[in-house]
Image (cartoon, rainbow, N blue to C red):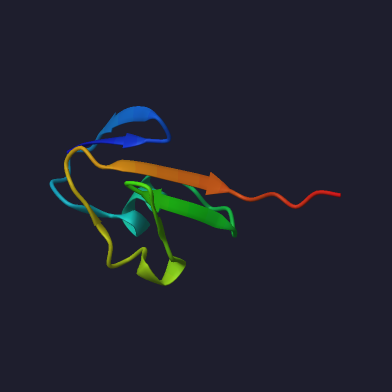
Length: 67
């Protein structure tokens, strides 16, 4: 499966992947993440049940606190 992840083309051998699986594969471990799939924000509780399709555009951003 080929998707665009953070504006880079990524190819995965799996035919189906969830957002949770992508986060694990790419080692996104930050506690506060913003995830957009095809310009739609996906809530954390939906990461495990949201499947990606060929050609999807996934943006994963981590939030940092500052002062």
